[in-house]
Image 1 (tube, rainbow, N blue to C red):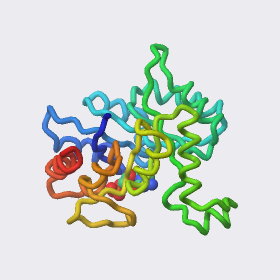
Image 2: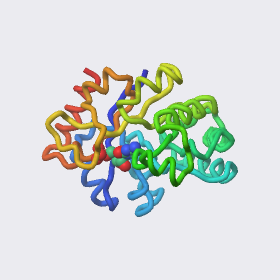
Image 3: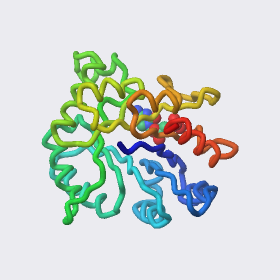
Image 4: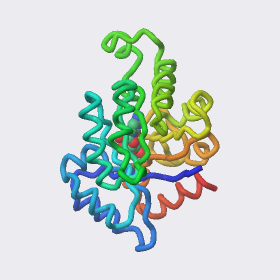
Length: 233
Ligand code: C5P
């Protein structure tokens, strides 16, 4: 089982991002996440630059469109040689299968494809009153995860508190990518349902996504190493 800590590069500019990565010694190449903020500011050249430095990349763009558009967009992302990408499971099975097709390179290799179930910013009231989904949140999340697994996807983004449940429903090999990770002594910020790296390691989490506890630390390299050590033991 591949397990790792992924640093969320939530910076507004490429210059700040590269400055942050320069903290790490030449031989240490953390797995990183590039999200919409940085990608929309700096474009695919930023992905290429970080890849050229030797990092593995989770490109967190959460695609959601008609199957043909998603398929073609995924083909573009796959050519960027990233290691993990994602989409909204709300796009339904046909879109998820098309995404997989688009991602697969001529040699048969492809990045991991991960689904977002329900955004953690969606609460029960919005689910019921705006999205008109009467099924309770927990059941909706698990059903979306099952749809993703049945469509051939590799895993889901979920809360570390949901990881064990996702594995029990979708299988041990179904990958869980979990934000909401905090050291016991670090600020929670706007994250509400949090877990320490150590407990996440015992709770079925495969990839921890950590932003501010590492990027805002006085010594980001030490914070990253601490997370890896606590998570992997
Ligand atoms: O700084 P922090 O550790 O809270 O960063 C977590 C990262 O994971 C951010 O990039 C955030 O957008 C992302 N994320 C999240 N919760 C989700 C999905 C993604 O915190 N449900």
